[in-house]
Image 1 (cartoon, rainbow, N blue to C red):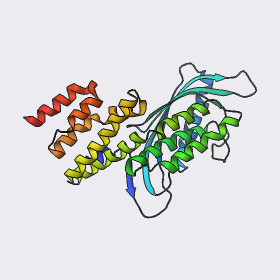
Image 2: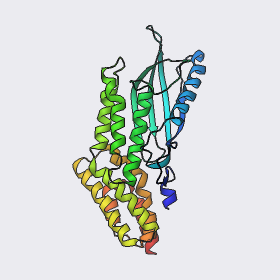
Image 3: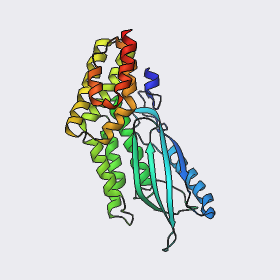
Amino acid sequence: MKKLYIIWIIVLLCSSMLFSQTLMPKITTETKSIKQSYLKDIENLKYSLEQYIKSNSFSNNIYKMNIPFTIKLFIDNIDESGNEIKYVCKAIITNEYDQRFFEQGWIFPDNTGTPIMRTGMYNPITSVIDFYGYMIVGTELDAISLMGGNSIYEKARESVEIGKISQWPQGCNVRIKKLEELTENYRLRKARYYYTLAIWDAEDGKLNSAKKNLNKALDFIKQILTLQKKDKYTRIFIEHHYKEADFFIESLQDTSFLPKLREISPEHENYFNKISKKFNK
């Protein structure tokens, strides 16, 4: 189960500080309303972005990590009205598991033929890619080390903070707000960590420790929902992890944690009833 749980992130703990690829990009585009003449340029853009992600580090290199980084880019319009051609887009960015971000109003110039690279200055393409890459890596680090994503979240902030005073300020304040919503939710960050510990402990046969850490994680989730019932990041976490209750029941031979799961995820009552009946047969 440990391998299944972290299939989206292959984490190899290592003592070296060697560079390794962090994000494994997969970029798709939706171009229904775009002129045929631009489609080749869009394919080139897609390729360039994938190469950019593959060739840059998004981690602190303490851990060797390979994390799916999927971007679905909806190109709504290509603005030809000014001196510079601009892409007007939306995007869904995920780790193909329990992280999901929606970027609306992403505007950047058509840099056909210009290499895409980090320069240390704000770039409306690479800085936004960096922002979400750091967000995903920071959250993955939170899952394996208590508040482990702090330094990476700071990189996320730096990647877009200077954009607010650039010629491409669109969306920068919204991105900073997303970062703050995620990083200031200390309960969710702790829940993510203790949940991971619970799975690892259960896999290693440390059942008392697994129960303790699982209950810690669920208690943090309950606290969040008491304060903010519709917190989107918490809801995404619940939606992608509730079915692992089956694993915990099987590993721990215990259903005492189910009432907490029923409370935080009442919409999945039928599923919890089903696995509970299976255990009690």
